[in-house]
Amino acid sequence: MLDIGFQWQKGRLLAIYGPSGAGKTTLLRILAGLTTTDSGFIEVEGETWLDTSRRINLPTRRRSIGFVFQDFALFPHLTVRQQLEFALPDPKNKAIVAELLSLMELEELHNLRPALLSGGQQQRVALARAIARRPGLLLLDEPLSALDDEMRNKLQDYILSAHRHYQLTTLLVSHHLPEVLRLADETILLENGKITAQGDPAILFAGRTITITISKNP
Amino acid sequence: MIDWQPLWLSLRLAGITTLLLFFIAVPLSYWLAHSRQRWKVAVEALVSLPMVLPPTVLGFYLLLAFSPSHAFGRFLDHYLDTRLVFTFPGLVVASLLYSLPFMTGPIIAGFRGLSPNLRAASRTLGKSDRTTLIRILLPNIRPSLITGAVLCFAHTIGEFGVVMMIGGSIPGQTRVASVAIYDEVQSINYSLANHYAIALLSFSFAILLLVYLVNHHFSTSSTLP
Image (cartoon, rainbow over all chains, first blue to last red; front, side, top):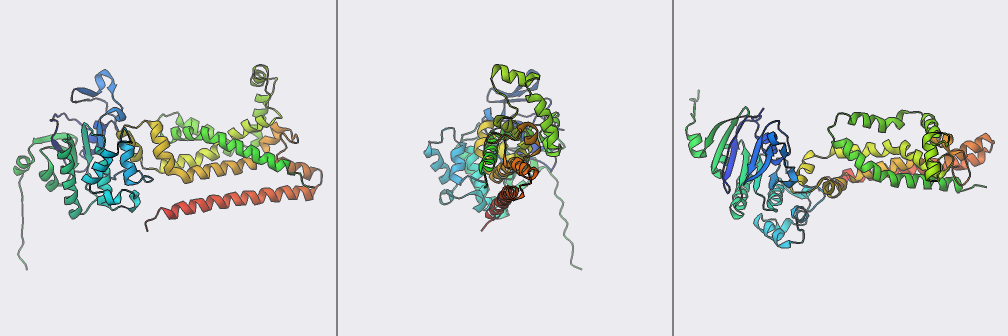
């Protein structure tokens, strides 16, 4: 059960950090309108997306969001280029597609289907597809959890690059502390469905106690 | 001398039924695969009923329904100048009911086999459910669509009980191959019956072979090189 409330500003990258089962993905899905909640209120830049007391619930497709799923959710039958063209409201606007392919360094892969792409490549396609419509809110659900460390670092670059280039408002769910420290302007700590702390990640995590034990060789 | 008309009639019946059922079964299967309404189970059971019901039971109730001495049949006769009993259109209607589960079964399985995130992703990209169905879901369940169509076609070809009840074995109208075999056996024309039977047997085997080949092709072509 989730019991939370928070606000943050346009243009910033907010990280939601917490252990498995804390409710991070549920929160993201509620924001996207993919999961329902009995009681809630969501307002984004003056537009009410959810208000259960007034029975307002804007369907997912009318919310200005971009969503990157943990399993990427790329469409198996479409090439990289076709995924992006599908995302656009006006598929004839080739300029946006070209720009995204360039930003995510996907030009060489534009004609390939997801089955032929590596995990990191698929993730870049998923990210490009999510931002194609210049969403008001970019939601990233543990986007890098399926990747090894080296790929993780590279992909973090792409996320930051996209966030800054398009001046997006981004919400990133992660249980990877270094990632949160590196990417987030602000962090929310979610534990058992409740927010237990909120603030600048450097300060938030500085207050935590670290215990290190090194044993002597016998 | 073999009369090709019953075989041609069977093919026509199966072809028209399959085509019509495709447009009925896809939206119905979509709803059954995705709906969370509790009464959907009842619909699912109703749709699957022809698979377990003796064909003569279905045929009997259709006979009553189509008969001009009952309400529905009378309505058709009066307002649409149509009779469904002992006519080819009547066979089509009966086949639509009888073969429906053979089309919906594979398609529902196909939909359920897709990751739910595909539909969710399409919604996050601002697409309607209709666009999602046509441009994302259907292209990814092609083997299921083919299997459904082929099974429906083959099952309709082999229909006998229902056809006997409401068809009347009228040459050129309702005397399909399965009924022709029965007639010829009744008249002790075993040779002719055998011709029809072999034609149906070969055709059914070829259909099944096609289904398995298609499914094999799709399952092997999706592996990485």
